[in-house]
Amino acid sequence: MAITPANISIILRTKQEPDVETVRELIQSKPVGLITTKPDVSVQDAMALMDNKHIHSLLVYENERLVGIISSSDYSKKILATGLDAESAKVQDIMSRHVTTISPEATLLESMQRMAAHGFHHLPVEEDGKIIGMLSWSDIMHLMLT
Image (cartoon, rainbow, N blue to C red; front, side, top):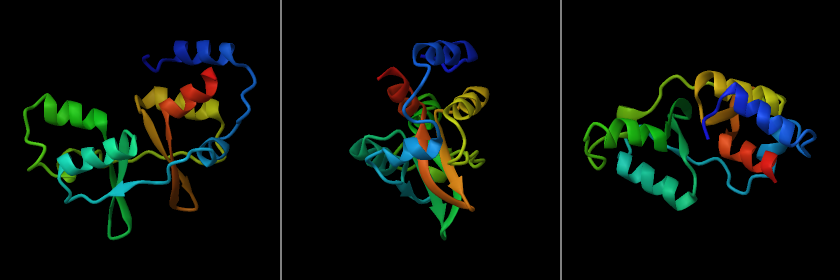
């Protein structure tokens, strides 16, 4: 399902009172902790890690500093579509360097609006300058439809 304002409206009408109201509440219920990688790791290894952990994005850290994010859609757009070799390509070659975050106190509606506005499927959750979790469109959909 495409993330559009119309779809957000449909979801909100489907479930008017979610049990979880803030991003913090939703990420605290997730079983998987924060999974990260480094810029010099091969894209193939990063994709294998995502597959192994059943996730679709990784935060990229260098010297304890967030430098990017890589997702399965980056792989599709920048490796599969262009024919680059995933074994020789590095995470830094295809990662998004500008990382948009969201506060843990943001509402689910705010997070959905931000994701829709920017076309994101994942948003790192930042508190006091530190990433404390990852919110995904799938997390929100699962919550809203159950």
